[in-house]
Image (cartoon, rainbow, N blue to C red):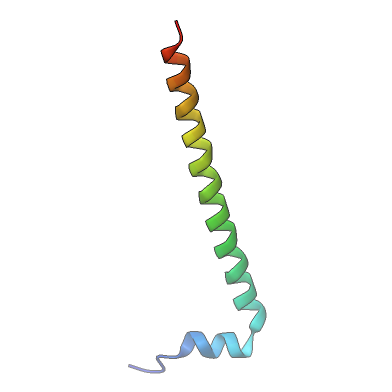
Length: 53
């Protein structure tokens, strides 16, 4: 099966790779949060506009 700790070995040898993975993870998490907030506010605005005559 080989070395099952290959990812940990890469992070030990090149810590900047782990930093890049962390930055990508943070960007995805905050980006998805902002998308959810954006679509939620858009749907509320649509509902508010439909309710008004």
